[in-house]
Image 1: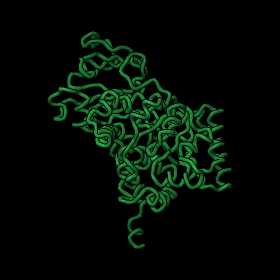
Image 2: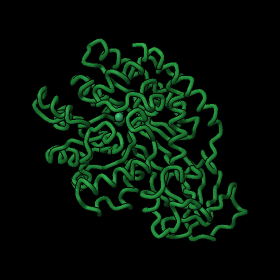
Image 3: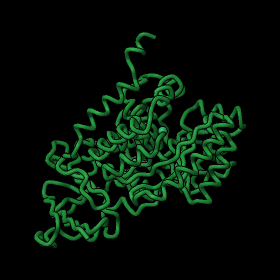
Image 4: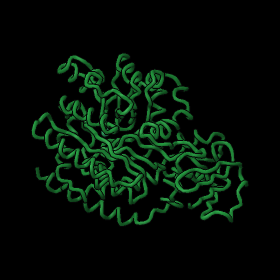
Length: 428
Ligand SMILES: [Zn+2]
């Protein structure tokens, strides 16, 4: 098995040697413990710090293609008038290039795993594996309450699931019913029993906007959370993105059932969906709180450090409590909790954990002086401070270099120009 020694690296307050063997962290000892000549690769960590790779628990990777499209409109209008018409033009190859760009951006900002929800999942999967990233790729289900679409989706879900048997250990298959306003009740019931029978994660959007709450109240006489609970979806297989508009009864349902909730602060702010994410209440009720960026068309970047900062600032201001969400806890929300939700032993720099780590370049103004590393990381720096990334024991970025990046940028611009035709749009 290949070995990597990261020597004399800062782990929060102490200098350590971190030894990686195969795809796991083998040992974490005081600096100077391991002789550098013994290992296949040695990284000098004397100007670097080590952190667990971030787990982006809610993303639509290939939406990088739509970065900057449909600005300044509400979610419903944004989906119906901009995103869905553009997405109808996409094929697997286009999605592949969009997802490649997403991977570059995530790697450059320290993410090693992402929970993806997008069309043409094989394009996303191929991109992630080529870039060396861990991901959950799901069959995305929208039916707009149309029976023929529901039957077709059932067929396609089975086909995609069967194909996933050949995937590498980096990628996990899941199923993503989009949201209660795009997926029929009978579809949710079908997906739920299919996921239970096959032990699959279910990834959905839940309680994202005030409009979704009002619609659920009008159509079902209950909240989106109560509605999903009624359909049996509230269980530890569920990743509920947003979970923003929640009553105390909703929080109890999410907590009692060990649901994984994913906060996406930048997307919620930008689409004006809301800002009072009930972090303390969800955590105390027993829900697992994770962090995500959402897609680049709504939050515009995939930088988890940027998302951590937004999450922390929001908690502080809406609670009127500068002590809200301590930094150590926030770091777990952005890494360990997401890993738990995705059933990975990752998110800690400890022996036995997956070797999914990022190295921070400490030779940046944001880290001088270094009184408190996590405060510098979250409040002073941004994703550009990431220098080297290791995923599954393999170096996927070294000294900020990712092979093939320029070609990917060129291809993405070509694809994006085909899908979003500005000349035609202007004529309309
Ligand atoms: Zn989303």
